[in-house]
Structures are given as structure tokens and as C-alpha cells.
Image 1: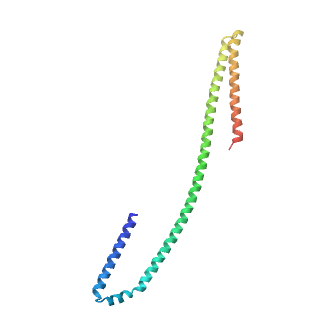
Image 2: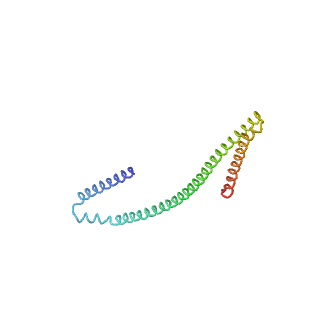
Image 3: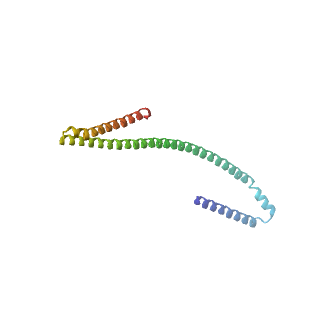
Length: 171
């Protein structure tokens, strides 16, 4: 932008210098105002030509601006389409992250329940190996068996719940 302004300033200064030199030369070479007027009238056609060129330049500039605006409109449409695609991709990503977080939560719950289940099974096995009496079975093993059954039921409920949620909303 600064380079263009510098070029325009140089051209304007150059035109002013040429105009000043022409005026100075005409003033000193032609002694009377009548001769100067006749000399200036010789350039009436040139003046008209330059005026027409300036008008053509303005029309050309308007046409260039029109083309540039059309290109900007097309670019804006492409940008909108790209933003729409980007928003859709972001929504899909958000949905995937949501499902991933939910899956991690379910996995953590199932892992905890499985740990408790295996712990109960190991405790039952330890108790039955060490003491095979009926009293031990009723007081210690039966509550553990009951707890193990509850844990199995919890795992089944979590699994059924996840399967039921995945089927209708599957994308």
C-alpha cells in the first residue's frame, strides 16, 4: 500500500513539474496573449482525448471492481460451506467424545464390579477349602454367594442398559 502511494505521489509531482515547465516555456516563447491562446486552442482535441481516456479508465475500474466483488461473493459462499462442514465435523466429534466418555464410565463400573465379584469368588474358595462345616457355610459363605449373585445381576443390568441405549440411537 505504501509503495502504491509513493508511486502515485511521484507521478503527480512529475506531472506538476512538466506542467510548470510547459507554462514557463510557452510564456517566454510566445510574446502575446493572442498567440498563447491560439497555441492552447491547438490542444483542444488532445484535451478531449484525455478526458475520454479518463472516462474509459473509470468505466474499466468499475468493471474490475464488479468482477472482484463477484469473486468475493464466491469466496464467501465457499467459506460458509467450509464452516458448515467444520461445524458438522465438530458436532460428530463431540458426539464421539461423549460416547467415549460414557464407555469409559461403563468400563470403570464393570471393572470395579468384576473386581468385587472375583474377590467374593476367591473368598468363597478360601473359606470352603479351610473350613467345610455347615456353620461356616451359613454364616460366611452364603452371604458371599448372595453378594456374588447381586454383583452378577448388576453387571447384567449395566450390559442390558448399554445395549438398549446403543440400538435406537446408533448413528
